[in-house]
Length: 292
Image (cartoon, rainbow, N blue to C red; front, side, top):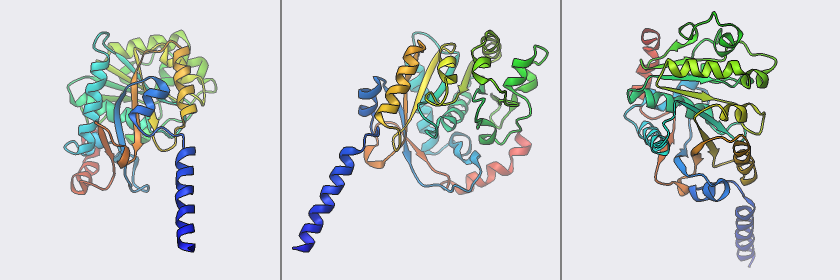
């Protein structure tokens, strides 16, 4: 009798937790909450948190793996979503911090470069930049250098990567007034200069609910990709993020559902892992200095 009562209590608690959990777990949840199509899904898998952030660049380190293939699928879906109006500047953002937008930006940039596009990856998160750590690059000069003076050329701040068609512009020294700088006419001019120097500019921005920077940038870029964490993004947060983009009159191409569980996997899957293909991964970082 005690075992039966314990089982019933456990089942009741499990159903209650599931009922109260309002995080977005599937493409259907994303569409119902935001009205956006899911262009790609990311399966959460355990990795070594102590390893360098460059191991998150699956498209660069594991080009023949399932992760790279899934990002190529996401790249293709973005191209289909923008078939009527080609995108020259793409903003990647999220509703709240920690949803994986920087990792998505970096892998997408590599995927587009591998397809033959000349790509510039711009870190416009002037509050908590992460692109330079992802690619293991110095952050001495970058976007703020371009904002400060016309004497700095794009080639002066665009850093080479292992992928020959991809260059990275980091943030540079962080300013005290990020929102004002990103909303300035000078920022628009810089985006035009960057677009003239490449086939595609991918912009990594702060989360939408943290500050207004992402909404400001979404109004001056050709398209926006919203990254959603299936494990922690609640419906209210995703809805607020979508509303912020709508108020900015942003052209939102779709969403990428990140860290989805195996049970919720959909058509397009990215395996987020750092331990697979160890032989290939070990050789890549060793050759980084020569490649750059």
